[in-house]
View 1 (cartoon, helix red, strand yellow):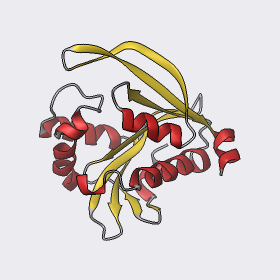
View 2: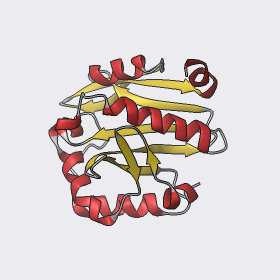
View 3: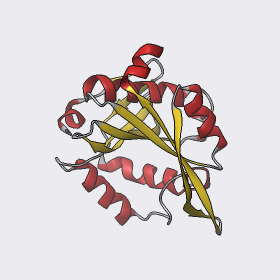
Length: 184
């Protein structure tokens, strides 16, 4: 599956996706450990560089179930990271992961473009049938984001996340290939 990762660079109107390199690990660590991202990410501890290097080695493995991209603006400056994770070729499904790490690019429409590129890549290149996203109940911006982009809230995982000293629900949003084709 990762044959695309080494060759692929995806282009959008305002952003491009490129392969993640070892030199990106420091910026990824900074983003993932920032309070704005950490609160809404599935990691439960702050990451050190050993964690980042292990993650990088995992995504670079030929049989990895993750396809990750560095998101850059038109000046080739990194603004975020995204990908399709938990890829299940047998069941043709994957989960969406998007982090816009640079604050000045948050809430400016870049997330929508990133999502559309990922959806197109998943459905058209990888022939995925179902894409999903896990969203924490307190992440109101992401809930609105996936609703606005025609995802359906289908499951509530009750008390599935421990944050800030208490349990929280996690919503699973999804979109099917035929639903996406009807909306485009």
